[in-house]
Image 1: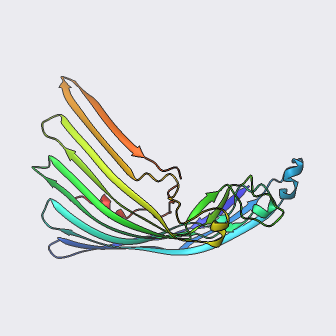
Image 2 (image 1 turned 180 degrees about the vertical axis):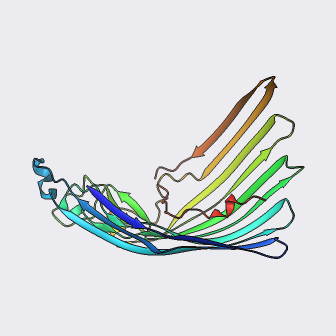
Image 3 (image 1 turned 45 degrees about the horizontal axis):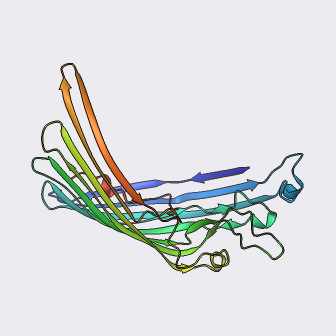
Length: 272
């Protein structure tokens, strides 16, 4: 049984200059971002002999965190807006929710993130063309991964295992671009292109003992992704009909990109 409790506060302040061409934003999550997790394993009257040592075993983890975001956006014209921002985030710590042996009921610390992003949003040709682009660098500390080979005490089997652990420091950087075009009435064309690069900067001792190395490229990282689609809508009197055709591709390395509770910055929701 896994029981958790969390509290959080979130605030956002936006400052506009006199001509409204330059805006500053700052956000704060906390200081009440706190969580407590309890894990009570098994608690059944009858359990297999191999799981008997886990019956009734309990573990507790608690922590707190303050995160913030700073951003600025500038309207070069009425149709073109550039922005830059920095934010922090985290993925909460806890206790291994699926130990196969008592020695695997181990805690892990939160994964923390520092995210940097710059971007451009634009519309032109009488709003018939929209182009958005951004580049980002995400710096992870105590990045969380789940391993199938547990680094536990001598005499305890290393497998089966599904242990979350803090693997060390990592960097994810990349870019993405989105294009939408309406060349004629009823026809819309959209396309996107994205690139991600994952790299471990350092490996923790526990991760190294579980078989993780600097050469590993992350889990389910897709270096390149692209899509292309078109849609045509036409009027049939009292009803409207549309047809759409699209294609996309993803090139994936078999190895999950870590996530945080405060993901990519919010400035991308602004419109030019």
